[in-house]
Image 1 (cartoon, rainbow, N blue to C red):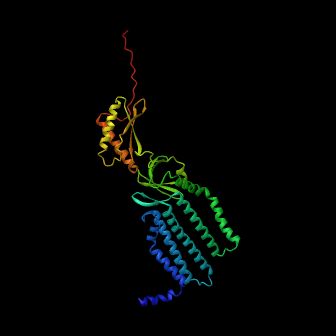
Image 2 (cartoon, helix red, strand yellow; image 1 turned 60 degrees about the vertical axis):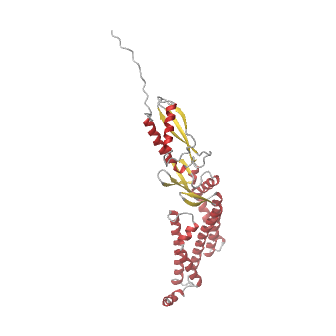
Image 3 (cartoon, rainbow, N blue to C red; image 1 turned 90 degrees about the horizontal axis):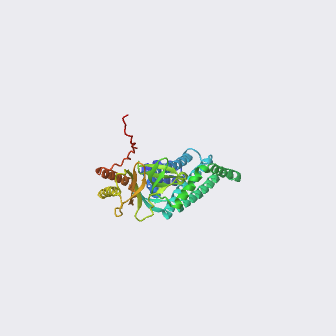
Length: 362
């Protein structure tokens, strides 16, 4: 061990105490990057967003280590002062990036709300969290930008103003791409119409039944309950849609669901009611039927067409996460009960019978 330290001493002697401290800090951050980011983030370590942050964090550590080693071993500090300035600028940017993560973590824990999404505990963002996070990120960005400008030697107002002015013009020219999504995201969070974990139904060319997974700055992620995949909606587009929030029902009974069937005119109301009652009695024995059976189903005539009568059965459910499975189970039971009674749910055909006059022999 002593021989190893003696061999490493000439190499370490080329670095100053500050550079050694920076190298040690970055090595430790790289080694403990996963548990550190896992603590600061509310995402699973298997998610794509977490892996992206982890790679970026480790890349920043590696960049700092590379700049320190390159500055001390390859370039003389005295004759290449620009390398020292570049190192300082990289450190300032890295510290601002790390400070933004810590600030967002503290703000979310202070003003956010803990929810259960897909069986996992997560801290959802609120209107206050989003506003404070944006303000803190903007403040850290401005401070880091001014510090980098001063470190790089842009001391004159013309040079510093030119750099900051260029960034301002760039943001102004691109505001139509990012400003509507940010504002719409703030409106969605402030209205509290949809929150993480809510089951919604929207129409985007086709009807989408899903769970709000995450509302971010520019987009909202929805977990499709039909195909079990994620859908990304821009906040501006989602705000312009008609959104049915099935989790926020207005009655203590639960969500009032409706199933529609068309039955011929040859079956009266008593027969139809008996068929629906038999189907719901069987549903009580099924595990997947998430129905509030203490409330009797309501059977109503909603249309009287030329071919058939449209009957609608209403029932209540509070388990909206399994709404699709409940619909499928009830439809299957109703079809079975109708078939046992000879009651066809197919739309009957209508024929006009024209009586021909009797033939007369001349």
